[in-house]
Structures are given as structure tokens and as C-alpha cells.
Amino acid sequence: MSMTTSSLADRQTRPAAIGTENRSSTLLDAEAIRAEFPILAQINARGQRLAYLDSAASAQKPSQVLDALDDYYRRYNANIHRGVYGLSELATNAYEAAREQVAAFINAQARECIFVRNTTEAINLVAQTWGRANLCPGDLIINTVLDHHSNLVPWQLLAQQTGARTAYVPIRADGQLDLAVYETLLAQGPKLVAFSHVSNAVGTVNDAAWLTQRAKAAGATVVIDAAQSAPHRPLDVQSIGCDFLAFSGHKVMGPMGSGVLFGRYELLAEMPPFMAGGGMVASVSLDGSVWADPPARFEAGTPAVGEAIGLGIATGYLDNLDRSAVAAHEEHLAELARAGLSEIPGVELHGPLSASARSGIVGFTVEGLPPGEVAKVLDAEHVAVRAGRHCCHPLFNVLGLDAIIRASFYVYNTEDDVTRLISGVEKARGLLGPRSFTGTAPGHSGDPCARRLIA
Image 1 (cartoon, rainbow, N blue to C red):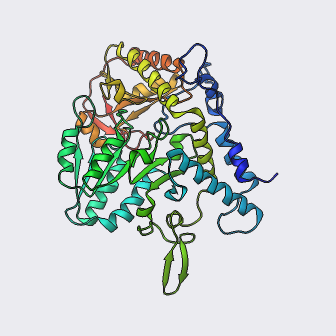
Image 2 (cartoon, rainbow, N blue to C red; image 1 turned 30 degrees about the vertical axis):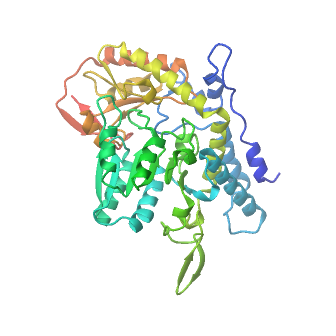
Image 3 (spheres, rainbow, N blue to C red; image 1 turned 90 degrees about the horizontal axis):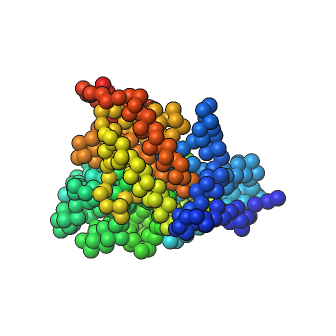
């Protein structure tokens, strides 16, 4: 049976129903959803099922996404936009249908959505195309101390290349951005404002629409890192009003090596290419080349076709779940976790004080215990968390922390996962006991951005 664009949409099967008789209708039926993720069915030698609490790093994939990848590579694997034979046309149609789906996911036009490998590549694309063409010596770039390295280092590099200068919005004692300082920086007439919608380390949720509105009023171009918001809450680039927005496919239950850069079309049309080669040109001669219109201009070479198709399926899956319900479910679990962890002696919670300013991320430390060692005890209990600096070194320097443990919740997590996290931390306290520390050491291989405390 041949695949068509309509059959791609047909495979975006509605996930498990929202709500149960015994729970609020704003919460998800997580047990039913969990059954759609094959990796979560594994049981360890002690009969414990996997409690996966590291979705902020990378989400697991539902059967629908895995089936879409398998179907592409088994049945119609071919290059796109080049062949006139059947397989190539099927692949091209599915690839462009995926672009339409991800555009709908963020309320954008398909021609404004560029397929990339991840958020990091998307932000570098903007920095090295729009940034190199528009920033001059002395121009101001505003970031925040909450930002992931992928939304800090590209702008630092751009500043070195162009002579621009950088400034950073600090956080207040309550874990939220200091908006008074933000306004002071905006008064200096920045050329660019770049910020994370949601902090990947401590879960701070920024008001993206308000921050964007104030930046645009100051004449700045706005870039948003939505890697931690796209998987978890409604996202509308029209309502936000930003110029560029990026997110990674692997965090929205899509394949590794997939992601999206949204850019306002009038800006994309003026930008030079990021890479040169096949597919991104309208014509080529020995005297020069004419660039193709966006988005093709920014998709040089053979793309990750199957991964883009899988990403389209993943965003359709999330849209069917209702992302407002997704956010409510995760925040419910996070609050249960915070309440339980706060009752354990020596546990300190990190992140915004206000529940309304927090996502489904819970960062914490245990007095006297290395975060990496606590994570190892949890792993022995089949509970997967992240320990380290989470690619946010400036934030950790400001907080005076060397590392934290991060539990991040998603659609397939349950209250049982919360219970096991809490009991695992209690067990770690009993097994490890308090320790004193004399220095720092590089992080373990599972977290290249981490530093671990050592005894």
C-alpha cells in the first residue's frame, strides 16, 4: 500500500483519553498514556518498572512515532524534492506534510518553519545569518542568566565576531527574572533580545509575550529558546509576537536529530544561507548562485527525512492530548514531588517560590550528599533523574551551587513515579550518610555540562 499525505495524518492516532472518573478533567490519564511508550514497559531485576524523570533532557517516544520512523525506512526511504519516481514523491509529500503539522503546532506558516537538528543548531543559524548581517560594533545583545548554553554561547561568539556587547538580566531571590533590570537594559536600545521561555535547570516560566512586547517596543529583534516550553504548554508565535523561536524534536517525543526554527518570513527572506550546497539554491552557474526562497534556503543537503516525519507525528500526538492538560498534569506531579521532598531532612528545593512561575521541573539538593551519588542510588531503584549543572554554568555560579538533582515530569509520569522518587531520596540519605566536600571535579559522562562534588 502506498503512503500519501492523508495517510500520514491518519497515523496521528489520538492518544489516551484526557481525564478519568476519579481525577480532575484537567489532568491526563497517565497510566493509559504510559502504555503507548514501549520503553517504559521494561522491568528491572527487582521487579520495578522504569520511572523516567529526565524528560527535560530527552523525552521518550510513543509507538506512533516509532512506527512512523520504521515505516519510512522500510517502505518509502528516498531523497526528497529531486526524484519524480513514486518513492521520492511519497517521501517529499510526507516531509512537507510534517512541516505543515509543526507549523500548526506553533501557529505559524509552513514557509516560516525550517527543519534543523535541534535548538542549538537553530539558534546558531540565526546568530550566523541574521546576526552577522545585522549586528555592528557596540550593538547590545540581551540574554538572561537563566539561559541554557545553547542560547548563550552563540551570542557570545557573535559578539566576538561583530564587536557587539552582551548584557544579562539577573534573577531575584524568588527565582524569577529581575524585570526592573530588564527595563533598564531595554532603555539602552538593544539590537537583539534572546531568552528561554522555560528554564531547563530550575523550571522558571518566563512570560514570553510580555518580554517580547517590551523588547519589540525598544526596537529589538527577539529570539526565544522554546526547547522546554514546546513539549509542555500551548505555544503560539503569533500571540507571543517573537521574530524567531526554536525547539528540539527529541524533547517533544520526536526523533533525535530533528528540530524546528520558526522565523518571520520577511526576516528569513532577507537572510543569507547558513550552509551552502544542494537544495538551497534556485540556480547555479560558474559565475555565482541564486538562493532558493525560505525555508529551502536554510536546508542544504539531504535532510533527515524520516526524523522530520516522526517529528510531525509527535507534534500531532501532543496537539491531540491538549497541551493545557499536559501542563496541568506535569505541574500537579511537580507540586506533589516538592511537597514530599520538602519533608525529607536536608533536602533543599531550587527554583521559583511561586507555583505559578514553575514548570514540571523539580531541582533539589540533599545536604552533604553529592548529586551524582544520589542519582546513582535512584538509578538502582529504576528511577532516572539528571544530576549536574545542566548546561547552565552562569546560573549555577549565580546560585552558588555546584550541581543539583533534576526530576522532570511529562505526560507518561504518574503519582507512583513521584512516590518512588521520594522514597529513593530517603534511601540515598540512609545509604550515603552526610559527607564533607573539599573540592570539585568534572562531571560524569552522562552530563558533559556537569561538575560533581567530591568527598
